[in-house]
Picture 1: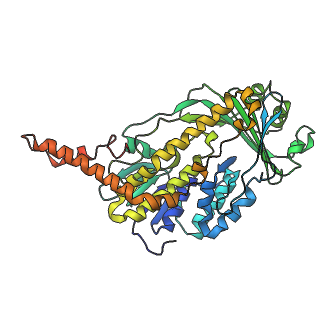
Picture 2: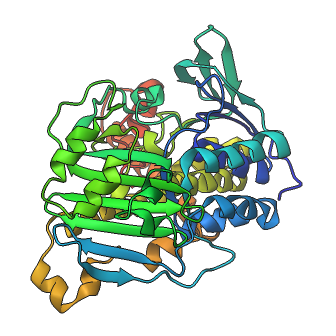
Picture 3: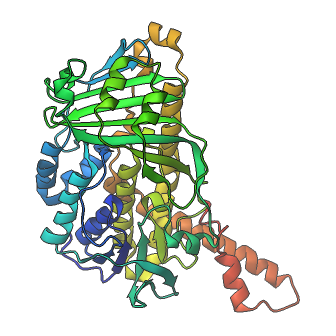
Amino acid sequence: MSSTKSGIKVIIVGAGFGGLTAAIECHRQGHDVEIYESFPELKVLGDIISFGANAGRIFYRWSDGQIVEKLRPLCIDIQEYGFRIHKYDTGEVVYHQKRAPPSPDAPVLNGHRGELHEVIFNYARDELKIPIHLNQRVSEYFETEAGAGIVLKSGKKILGDVVIGADGVRSKARELVLGYFDKPKSSGYAVWRAWFSNKDMIKDPRTKEFCENGDTFNGWVGKDCHFLFSTLKGGKDCCWVLTHKDDHDIDESWSFPGKVEEVLEVLKDWDPTCRAIVEKTPSVVDWKLVYRDPLPTWISKKGRIALLGDAAHPFLPTSAQGATQAMEDGVTIAVCLKRAGKGNVPGALRTHQGLRYDRVRAVQKTGESTRDLWHKTDWAKVKENPSSIGFPREDWIHGFDAEKYAEDNFDSVLEEKTRLVADKAETFLDQGRSSSSVIPTSTIIKNIFPTHHSIISQC
């Protein structure tokens, strides 16, 4: 996109969708970028992931729409089938939610996490030639007034102008940014997840309909629990997720092999179709949904390190926006770095946070509201107004263009951040002038740019 090089060296830790998007967008904006990833090799792992139209708009800009053309055959197509929501016990379809008309330049893309990730990974590494260093575990983040870097487990230091921590909720960058270790908490919920072939499903009269009619998407809604089931690639692949109450403590690992028997026990009073689907499942993952208190800031003290995606703001899966919001982060950081320039990286990162913080918090809340909508269903209300139980598709989320918003609002937000810092500096210096003692320069800097509760981090 940009033929002009910015001279900004960006180090990204983590090669998930957020890290890859940040790298691709930094490349588009003329920055020099590298990725460091702890996994030793690319593997096609996981199950279904959802990207809203606000992510599709980002994908479409890559390689003039060619990346979307590669992703589309891997994704579910329910334009005709829609989303059918059932009452948990009777199996009655209480609402048939139609898909919105498709938008070629802002597609909705839902498919296997590993398969979609492979397309984006290969685009970044092979087409754009972005260096991606695998099997590189980061032991430390650091920054100075002039730059930032990481220390690898081998002891090697990697230096740059800015570091983006896109390595998830356990990122070591969180502790540097916050100044303390924040332990994950249980959200009170967990998800069983599965992805498998249709070979047994298609043999059973109770389930074969889901595999013989193209792609399908069905949901069963009950008290404190919901079960979502999809078939993709013309009914060839099957996927389900079941969100349920869970009061287990969270430790350092929160994804475990699950037991099909436990899933069946939860579904014992549900529509027999749900049990028939689960009975065909060869294996299941038990994923504990963790909660993190909203961070006061995503930006480090000296303004050289930024948290991105789950490292900054983990989402509940019922938002269907976690990966998409990480992508919006990557787009925004890249634009802000370009607009601020190499001489004002701290201003770029603080402006990025100013552009993103309130939007992210608002989108995060939709995960809770959708979960509560389904888990505390007023069935009398649904009978009167079936659409009240539909999955929310709000224009302010899906119609958003992260790149345009950053370009249009960068100057005003940067000016606001600069003015707030200047006002705080003047207030502190006025206090010093009224005092008979001389205030050391180090104290002035410390009070103008405090570590965690700066006026910048609150805006």
